[in-house]
Amino acid sequence: MSEALRVGIAGLGTVGASVLKILRDKGEMLTRQCGKQIIVTAVSARDAKRDRGVDFSAATWFDDPVELAKSNEIDVFIELIGGDEGPARAAVEAALKSGRHVVTANKALLAKHGVYLAKIAEEKGVLLNFEAAVAGGIPVIKALRESLTGNTVSRVYGIMNGTCNYILTRMWDEGISFEDCLADAQCLGYAEADPTFDIEGNDTAHKLAILTSLAFGTQIAADDIYLEGISNISLADIKAADELGYRIKLLGVALKTESGIEQRVHPTMVPVESVIAQVHGVTNAVAIETDLLGELLLSGPGAGGAATASAVIGDLADIAKSRPGFQHGPVFGTPAKALAPYKRAKMRAHEGGYFIRLTVHDRAGVFAAIAKRMADNDISLESIVQRQSANSQAEATKTVILVTHETTEAAVKKALEGIVKDGHATDKPQMIRIERAG
Image (cartoon, rainbow, N blue to C red):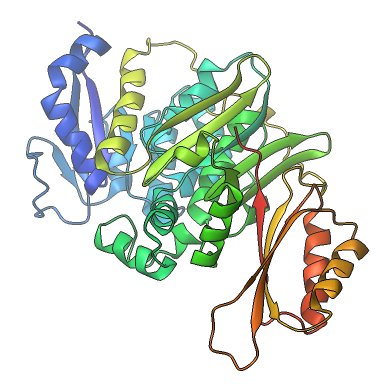
């Protein structure tokens, strides 16, 4: 049997502790599968005395994760600290420059510095694996980097944040407000005390930026993503979508067009009969459209200690199975130096159209004015629904729901600005893209 693979882990939170438990409980099985024993020889975390439910006393303790990353006691450095700067970045960079393989679950770090770190890994001939950084335990990174070699990818989209999917699912299932669903998610540990990063779409954007680079061979461009979260989604939107035969999901979408690449994260209405509409709760799902396979959908647990640790173990096993002296494949599927500059696509008509919800004064001429604003911006309407609003205002209001045919976002926004300027709307208009998801 080959010499043991020595592992150092920085970060012993939920995921780190789960990795230690899997290596303890399934050590013999992993040794058989990988052809060598995997041993944790060093660890680092903020608190050495905290009970994590697993014994790591045989490993050398490091107060400084950077020193651990450079230590001669390890062959692989597992980074589970988090954050795009500070000790996480310093430790990963130090490990790679020292010729150590790296496994990380840090999507923020990769979204900001992934290409730079990939260049170091490729120059040093070591692996930088990050399956756990996107969609938890779903093997989407391996699929794009290895399994789909030879396929030309045209679109990647999916549900990549369990917190948002949990909230939207409960709003639809139980008719509970966004605020109450968020509070429940926090109580259950699905949402952080400060949930902004999740509910405003930043977490999904980081994951999408990584997938975009893998899918299209471009440099990572997390700052070029159109970003909109779910905090403005109301029960009225959920109910209206249901009546129209749609579900609302927070999707990350990356699409290759003739003029460049389109990246966007926003609430999306998907047909109720589509597969993506059936993804509920904290589950994640990523769809990949290719020329050879058509559409491939990967779905499963997107977060949590066990799911994320499973992906870390998978990456670690790949390293254990690799042959000494073997030339490893490029980190992002294309050599880092050959990744094309990111080119943002020109604005084009959105094929799925838009859902628009307006609360307007119930008086003569309002609907005609709305129709004129739409016509003036060349917006064709697929359906129109009017209903009396339930409120205690002195003047009655109506809710008007419009579904457009293919049009541009700029045209819709200009029309809505005109409606507001005309003084017809009593609240801020709601606009949600409709995705013709599979």
